[in-house]
Amino acid sequence: MRASKYILPTEKENPADAVVASHRLMIRAGLVRKSGSGFYFFLPMGLRVLKKIENIVRQEMDATGALEFELPILTPSEFWEQSGRWSAMGPEMFRVKDRHDQWYALGPTHEESFSYLIKPLLKSYKDLPVNVYQIHTKFRDEIRPRFGVIRSREFIMKDAYSFHLDDASLDSTYQDMRTAYRRIFQRCGLKTIPVQADSGSMGGSASEEFMVVSPIGEETLLLCGKCGYNSNSEKTPFVLPKDFHTKGPKEKKEVPTPGKKSIQEVAELLSVRPEDTIKTVALKNGKESVLVFLRGDLELNENKLKTALKWTELEMIPEAELRKVGLVPGYIGPSDAKAPFRAILDSSIRKEEAYVVGAGKEDAHIIGYVPAKEMDPGAEVLDVALTREGDPCPDCGTPLKAEKGIEVGHIFKLGDKYTKAFQIQVLDQQGKARTLTMGCYGIGVNRTMATVIEQCNDEKGIHWPISIAPYEVALVTLGKGPEQEAKSKEFYDALCGEGFEVFWDDRDLGPGFKFKDSELIGFPIRVTVGKKFFETGEISLYDRKRDREEIFPFSGFDDLISRVERLRQELVQDLTEE
Ligand code: ATP
Ligand code: MG
Image (cartoon, rainbow, N blue to C red; front, top):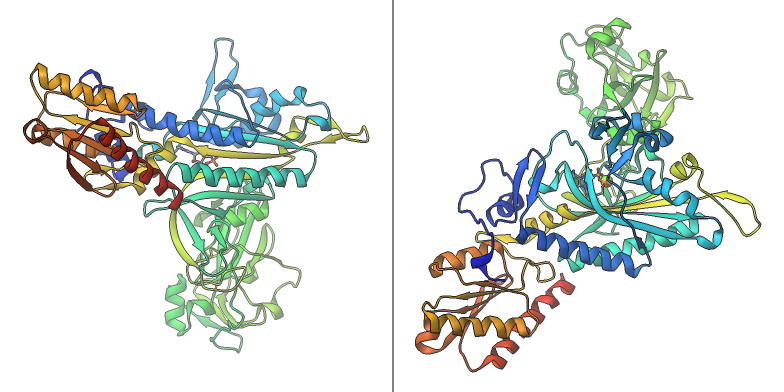
């Protein structure tokens, strides 16, 4: 490809609304342009990267035996009503109405569509297991689209769905997907960590997210350096160290705490640690209200609570509403654990220890409160606290380390939610109808592209892993005049003839400008046939990632090509090592 015939709007200035490197660089390198909030135009150079990632995903999915489909993006509301998600999905789902007043959703995910499609296609256990997928556009009306294509409202996803007679078969495909995902991300030059993730209210039995450690990540990962336990903090069980004891007063007594409502204020006034107190969080989901009691220094993990209660949503109960039912915000305590509230004791509380708790009335707390003596022994105990860095690993007890992560992929054992809703059954070996079990597996293609840039950039721009670079080689030629141009073309033809993907910068521009562009866009290899070549016969070969330039006298195309090939092999090798 010749740059003079290309549309390549590179920019010197950072776009004002771009706060992360990948967003800035994708715009500046002319890979994408913004269309609207959360919508992006892909330009030819950017599209090449996207298609290369898609191809890697496709090759690895096909290698596992998965079958590629393409489904309509527009999905009828009946599909969603059948699974109950037409109402459960909320405002993230784009909904549109056709001229016949029929409602549709722009597919945010395709469990329903694939279930509808696959049901009549599977008849017997002999048709199983089967794993079907597509690489296609998804829509989500994200409340806060941000970071460019990392969280956009229209994006490409590889979404796969597998169907099985039993859990053993589901597990086998789940493990195959896990291996395929590792290969996919490795081939894209991306270092990922699979972490245990929240199965949410979908009720699946296992789920892992593929995370890329990055300071801009929106997820918090808790990792164990010793035993390899990794999880999303949304899900990490909280483990109370064995030697934990409260240190506050042991004798039960009501004490005045006028105006002291926060844990910090109460702890200071009574000279105890936040760990020696119990705090109360009041929440509702529209149908039910709960009071959660947890240790004063800990935060509630809303995801764990939602999963444990099988709630799809939850909100804090406003103070005015609490007052209406006789509760005193800031002073709520275990004595308030009665109707209409469901009381939940977090497992971080050691029931035999003495704590400071709210007295259930204005301006007072109770010290020396021992839950084992006072509370209903049948009170519901759940693990709903947010685990933090330094808390013990649930598997081996070593203090956990926290990192921020970007989720690029997700694998999920769904169970029978959709197969039940769509009555997907086959006849088993005994001729009996059996409802299938299901898995689903997603990869964000554009997010993967942007995340690679987050990992592979420097002050000059992007340095693409060779596997997904828009072109492997940038050929920068600087000769003017017909003879020099003809010579430059010989270089282009020689490199293309050897099968290299070459982007030939033949524009009538100065060397500085051309070098800057090639470094900004991030072609892994650059061959320069510059002024020096026409004076002294010197050529330069540049390794973008290592910022390493080799200058040598041109001694024929065979020598040049073997040097370029050697560098290419080295860059391919990097992918297996990282
Ligand atoms: P997130 O928690 O980041 O919103 P999710 O859990 O909603 O993601 P999934 O439903 O598991 O995502 O979708 C599968 C994959 O699709 C994700 O791992 C991610 O790579 C990608 N993805 C999801 N939402 C977006 C988005 N708004 N923009 C770009 N990619 C996305
Ligand atoms: Mg997810």
